[in-house]
Every structure is written in structure tokens, then in C-alpha cells.
Length: 87
Image (tube, rainbow, N blue to C red; front, side):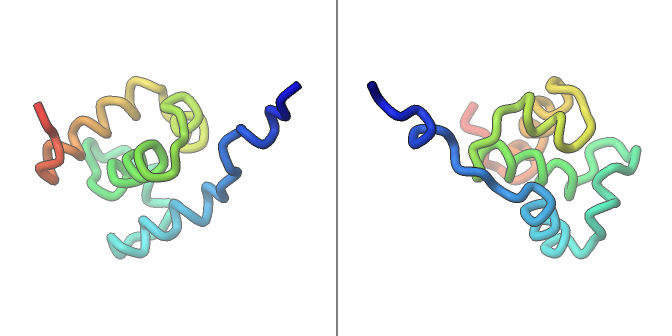
């Protein structure tokens, strides 16, 4: 019987990863929770957690205190802003 624990995604320290993104943008990690629409640092945080760290949309939303749809749309907007959108 295979050991499914080996196949699980590696655990990441979400706080540490978001701190790294915040440092790149020159903001505090707490600024990710601001109510500004399409805040680039927050969108980059969504993108980093999902695309780079392999978190699911649901997990990333839970960890950042937003809905799954917000993460999905935020990643879409971030890709458009950075020219990474292939469509």
C-alpha cells in the first residue's frame, strides 16, 4: 500500500511567503488585508501562493481571508497586469 503522506504537498510557511512578497513590493504584510481594489501586492500574493507554492485556490483564499473567487479573479488580473496571460 503506498504511503500517501509522501505524495502530499510540502508544507510551506504562508506567513513567511507573504512576507517575501510584501518585501518585494515595499509594503507590510498587513497591507494585504486592505480594502483597496486590485492592490498589486495582494494580487501578487495570490499568484505566488497558487502558481509558485502550489496552494489550491481555496487554501490560498482561506489563508488570506478572502473568498475563492477573489483569489481566482485576482490571479487573472495579476496575469493581465504583468503580461503573463496566455489568452
